[in-house]
Length: 123
Image (cartoon, one colour):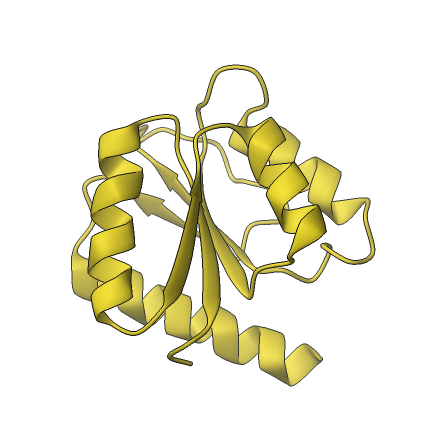
């Protein structure tokens, strides 16, 4: 699982920077995007092994990004972990899991590992 490529998508640069550091220390290769549109372009060029996607972003929301990915065969099986500060967030169609910010780092690691294992079982 280490060495897996993760794409972190959040409009807050502090969150993407923090996650790059934390996940990089665990051996993940981490790319970051600050918008859904940019993330979709990045994923099309180099499909990640899994993604962490903020639900509420300006422009393309996390749900919109998942909808777009689901319509593209090369991206439809990429597991997406949605992150949100909204404790009343609706169920996210197409998401592997949803984590409410702030979340514990160990929970994040466990969720990523589960997503990567699930992807490898389906491929």
